[in-house]
View 1 (cartoon, helix red, strand yellow):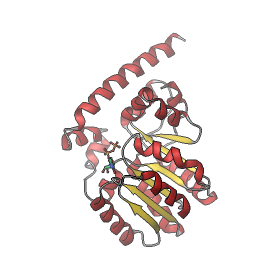
View 2 (cartoon, rainbow, N blue to C red):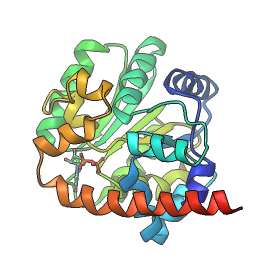
View 3 (cartoon, helix red, strand yellow):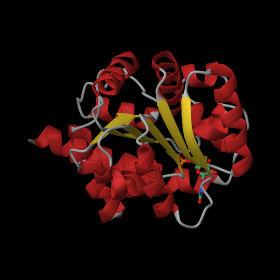
View 4 (cartoon, protein in one colour):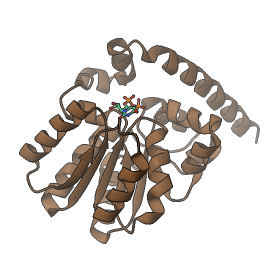
Length: 242
Ligand code: UDP
């Protein structure tokens, strides 16, 4: 866990978007992991995902407020949340402005179709090289095809950690591209699910809204967050003792 926090992105959303724009312009390969407490706890419990989080190929950004607060408790100067859904919106704008290309993998077929329609209407200069829903059997074969298209951005919405593991497995086949595991972002950006109202976001209660809307998340949320908090407290005590 310490290692994840040592490499977490600190400088805030706008700076991060600038960083991505620079990477896109220079065609520098980039792999973004948007982290909430659950992401980091899966890393602690899953060696294959732990390797990905620690890898110098990946950038971890603080998506969830829990990660921001935990970093601050550990005296790591994380400025604010950098959310997956907002990164995706900015990437669409950038691709549109620069006439660059995109591939979408993940979510249900009907969600993806709606998102493709939206992109066509709102970002007409984006070159959508392809899209595949997240329920196809052979996702490795899909990734082989994606590698052949050489997109500027590849968004993968399969949930944590499947999306990151799939990207990582195929990452070395690509010479360029910004890769982001975006969880439920296609559901939100297609208009299928609503993001929390602004007031919830402002009060750092977006997580509460998601649980209220989808009560099946509560067990997953509770287990990982309780473990996360106790781990952070332990790390803080260790820091104070050093
Ligand atoms: N999903 C998918 N294939 C699967 C399982 C999930 O495409 O086999 C999609 C699902 O439809 C949703 C996204 O992955 O769009 C996961 O969303 P969730 O909000 O659960 O993501 P997380 O909380 O893990 O970020």
